[in-house]
Image (cartoon, rainbow, N blue to C red; front, side):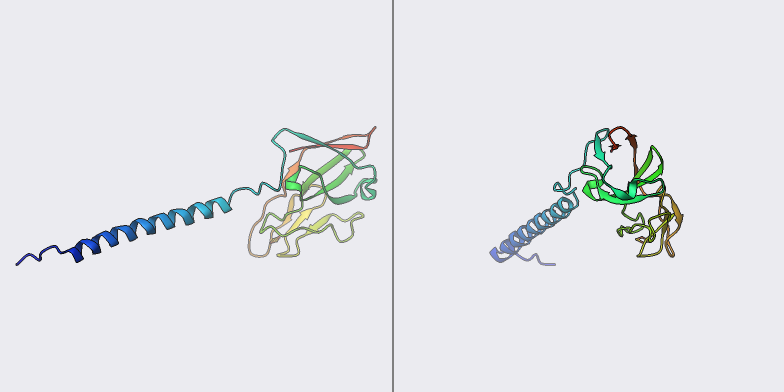
Length: 166
Ligand code: FES
């Protein structure tokens, strides 16, 4: 079989083919890098380093003045500055936990009747959490979720201050 001579046209084609392949790899790498960068934590939402504590006065939060009360509020530096639930479970004992449903991330409302209500119900798929602990008590429709993340908290009665750690 006769050999076809290599021409300038063939050389240019080979060069263009190689150049386009390199450009394609570069574009893919750039796209992957930008996608990965978009997954990094949002630096505008500060949270504290592990082990840090926040002192949070609760003396002016009416809902927390009686045992069984629950409030939703931001504690700066905790939970990426999103609301947390604070539940008063005894005279000097509080539980602090996330307000973000562990199923698909819907924001959770306060219990419908906060005074004495015991359940937090997710409006998205009906998962249900215990209002005094954040523990899951009913799974979402057709799926599963876990307990709400909690933050360690102690109470200083003399200053009506919660000491919350990350
Ligand atoms: S997001 Fe809460 S039950 Fe689905």
